[in-house]
Length: 452
Image 1 (cartoon, rainbow, N blue to C red):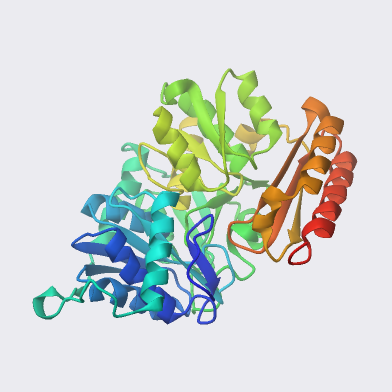
Image 2: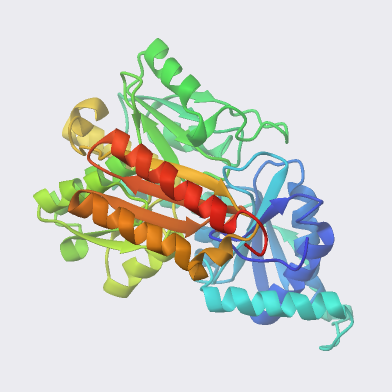
């Protein structure tokens, strides 16, 4: 792998091949230089490569004189929370929902927020400098100047307290929840917190072995969760991903409820209680048109951003808004979190059901009339070339004209993989399929070869 490149959600790649210990070491050194701080908090998920990369990253930070507070295995939102509470920058070693062989590194500011793009670019430039000349000034500290790597056993308690506060003193007693931990960072934590709030909890995929994270489980594969909810006659199922920054829900009938519907539920509930500041919710360009129509029918504004909870957070803060999220289940409650948080979202959802005295199936039925949406991933060696390809954009303009106001077209390069994502929405599924296939063909023909 060449120098680290930040995508939609940090640096990501095949562990020990693309994301190597050498690269993690350089990333740690570069981060300490760009974000000078006396200490950093660092956590990881349950991947086999996690301790290797966390050690290298921490060594890089300590080499530049920064202390490292080792949080061990904790969810990504927990690392963000601890960074904010400790008032220091942080890093999370995780590839989120990717297979176990991948890994990644996400950076957080001392406010618990992901770094703005300009700071990520500065870190990238510093990595280039370090890789070109590891002994380049500034001179490395010695003696008392060398950073320490110290365990921080109280970190989990900080995050746990913030979760318990979410119900404002109410309990989840009487609710039976099934939580699929994806054999990830929340395997020990999520069942414990939900039980502490009074719920009866059945845990699935909570025995990580370093290789089973996200393996036929979690938010990308909630099938077993749905079957278990039905078999156990549970009230609600929650499917987390590997680092627990997102969640997909399952109602008592086994039906999956995705981020668009959850966000609609939260928006209406918060608006009714006077908690939806600006009477506006923030979504990404991938959010279904049906969500927008639902909000419009209830007089709630919608603000749209690029994909990624970092962009959602920036929009929330720019306008002083309280709620935003993504179809994938990243949802941000801005008064309580600085990033998407699957456990927090699950708690808020269970509390909403408890307050309403209604099932999730009842609450969500007919709420969002989803417009057929087709997503095609087109493998492209250099997806960044999309922006300058006139042939593709001419085809997109024609497709938009054909669909009119009852459809949408979105093309974007993936921030984490060598893909161009083609998304089409239309009132008729057959039309969405046809337009998406036609545009995918144009993209492949125009960009499928390097230099094309």
